[in-house]
Image 1 (cartoon, one colour):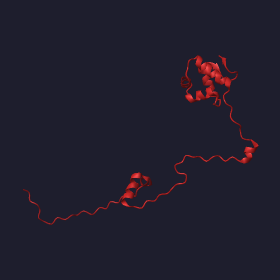
Image 2 (image 1 turned 180 degrees about the horizontal axis):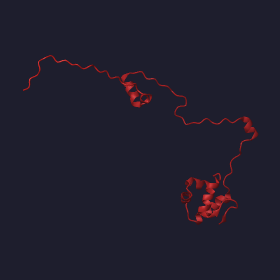
Image 3 (image 1 turned 30 degrees about the vertical axis):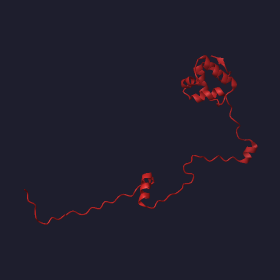
Length: 146
């Protein structure tokens, strides 16, 4: 068996002290860190932020004078009944659903529905796409076949 050195053994290393870095602000707001601090009894500061967590936008301020004078723009024009009926007739003649027409003109089905219900504000780009797919004239003199 190997024999051990019976002499005095000394440690010649210097002690190493490791300092933890300060926690970042994001780490302090982490729910796990908050719970750990609560469990250990550390002081916790809570601050209620003004309007925090609400998506409410401030309503635009409208002066009473402008309302009385009526200088604000009136309601926007909607799709006329002639255009609505022309779209519906042409779509049904082509045996397309509103969703199919919407896919062909690269719009949402809701857009086609709004045009047929007369709730949409006329957009010349959308009307031209519908004219191309349905092969009917919707702008100018309405309802004329191409």
